[in-house]
Image (cartoon, rainbow over all chains, first blue to last red; front, side, top):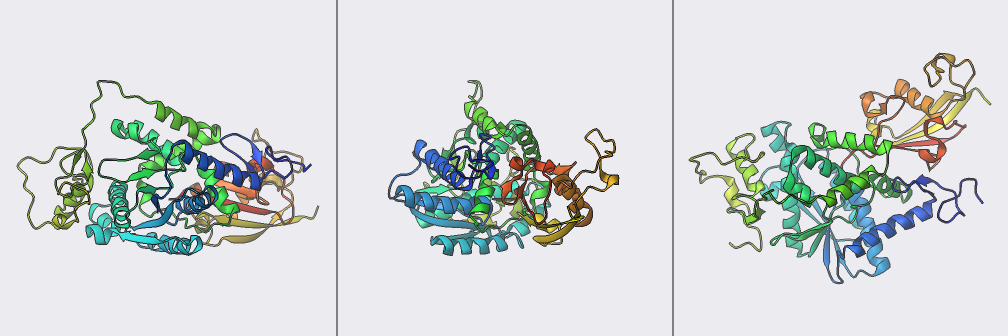
Length: 341
Length: 117
């Protein structure tokens, strides 16, 4: 018996303490429980059916690299019968995204999966670099997140997939719950803990890593020697999420189960009857789903094109007596497939 | 015990950017914590000689190898939350974290998780 035996198999030496359970386990048992837990998450939520075409949102970062590896492993091991693709979005952030895309291309070869790359430039006519040049260093993630969400949907439509999976992990979701509470964003609070989301016009989107701790994802990548890209986006230091992340990390240090517990709290929230949510419509301009007349992406783009900082960023009524100039580039954004147009 | 320890330190997850963009470092450390740094938990100076531990190594790295942005590496006497530490390929939480007594040729890996996924 080794001096510090694994809590599960007792025959090998423990090398990792699981934040979720406090157990000290060996390398092989760690691989097994990590992979099996993701498999159970997928099966319990009935995420896939045989024959599904599934696009893995791949950035070259730690979560999506491990996700690609795990999806391929589980698909083979348990015969999910899925057709897997890698889908990558190029936001046009020099020095950050161009390097991480190289990692995705390596992943494509290592896992032998088809890869599609879509860029903000080709879709919207704006790179993140140009956007930040125009609006400054505030609200960058608002633009990027909105554009990326749509870009993934468009890319998935081009690949004719049934489902998108992203590498959001337990830490990410717990941070989002905290952020939505801090901002009073009730609509998002109700949606952000769902493992699978789907709109009428949009493709199903799931998060198989919903209950996987970031620490374990990094440890899995380290022990399996998976190659990933790891630098902070140059525009993120000013992001609001940083506050929630720091707070969450401190909470985790004091009590590791806090992350899973916050997610469970988030799942248990029920809206009081008096709370009114906006009904879902479709964007008048491009047909994408929207809570308002214009979807967030079109609203943000109009602000960019007209040089009005802050337009579309906050929930606000459109300015009175406004007419949209007819020469705006936004009118050439491709219509969203499946829309009523 | 010899008077100096040789240790292999590896930085990952972007942490290397704070250390001259170099992932691997071989460092030479005194085997015992020098008296002027040898503080007890209550802050008073400890008369007994204590062997070098991971907390001592972290402070040593901060003093001698860290090039910038100290707050991105350490928080007080420990690493900033979100940085994982492995000692000879083992989670430092199993090895006693900062109190682990270093041995010659130990491998310490520090991985930041604080970046996009």
